[in-house]
Image (cartoon, rainbow, N blue to C red; front, side, top):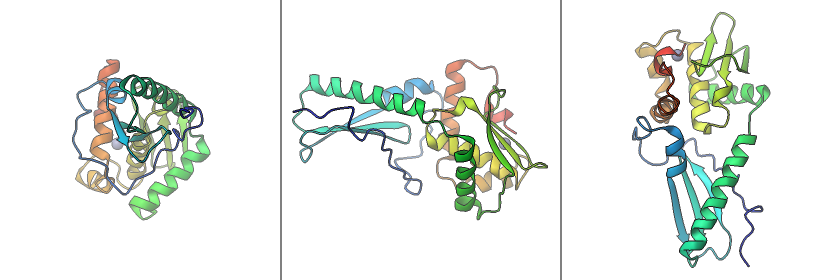
Length: 210
Ligand SMILES: [Zn+2]
């Protein structure tokens, strides 16, 4: 009996912040992000896997684990099902402001020894040319709702970027040195550049972030 896609652990995305999966290439930079997100699918066949199918995101790739004996036609069908399922889950999984504050605290502890302490972190819908912004005097951080549904490593990057501004205001060497601790800075910036390129926005966030 084939595994049921609705009961698979597709939503279980392994959290691997410490392990930098794969190389740090800037492959996504020049490509539309949607194309990257849908085309980078890696199917792994396992002889130990008898009937269950699993899918999860690993960075900007999607891994689908299937039984070794599955036919090509079945593989195509299952990959399609699992991609749809993941996409549906991700579009539902929006962090609330509370989760955003918790995540900010965790990132600050992990990368800045807890020195960045925002007074508030929240989503805003009126920010369309910047991914995030920070008002150091108030200790307030705002993230664009356009980040919702993007991979976690991208949201974390923007959050960390704004947290870093609580410590260093501009974008000088001091600032980027702080962000070097986060292993996916380059990749996240490439992802966001890809989104901008795909949507044909007039301005690049890398130059407009505050
Ligand atoms: Zn900035």
